[in-house]
Image: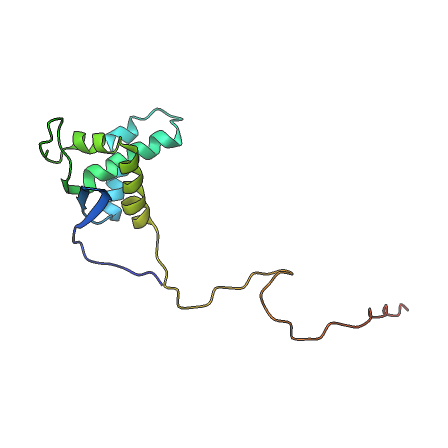
Length: 145
């Protein structure tokens, strides 16, 4: 069963000590829009997976981040959310990783309820219990006519 959260309420993500992002829900429309971002389309053919992942994370964040706390300029003054600011923020490795883990990956994983038994593995290491005693001797070969 897929657990659906149908609320479109923005939520705060605590990405690092003192850094929080207010993000909207990760919707299909947001992801489709991010995939069509000019920065992604401008990537050269054959771009590395790392370059694609960074460009996609930035495209998603530019659409999802509504506000932030704990982001300031060189003098320590709080700054407003801008597309350039979001891109710069995601150039910080721990922030990028936290955003990928807490927002992007979390939104892409369908959480199934864990209220049923998982199927048992097949083969000689299966977890099912034996129902018959082992044979004592090998069975004789069938007669051939």
